[in-house]
Image (cartoon, rainbow, N blue to C red; front, side, top):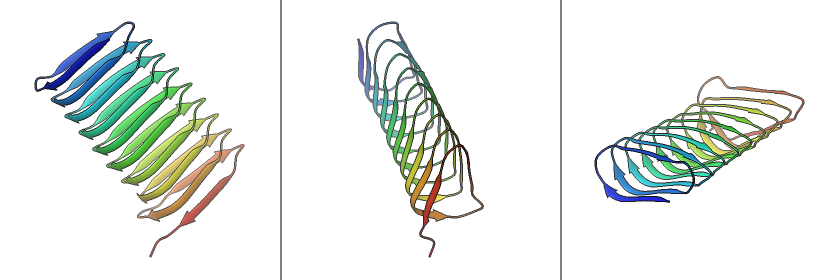
Length: 173
């Protein structure tokens, strides 16, 4: 396991087996892990993370995130910035994002809640659920459903599925 707290310079961390836990970091963070969780909390700076066989949890980020994982879910909470995330055999969950999202999942669902920005989400063999979001949305699934509730559309939006259902509740005033 690797743990760091209250650190100001940039961090470059590699863990071949074991968890990475970072708290209250200011600066660029680059994490690579296999067979362990990554918990990154209260980060002021950009994050680039790669994970194989482990969960990724990012909370209270003031910066951009670039995350790729295989065999593990990704969860983002309270982010101000842009998220670019890709996962194979894992779910993506985003709660409270003020910024743009580009997400891609294969064999996993996406649950996107309270997003204010542009969203481009693609799921192959998984559903996309979007709730309480405001912005421009391009949502695409192959073998999955798209559901949206309490959406405010600011620009043109595209919702596409092959072999799935689309259900939208729009609340534009």
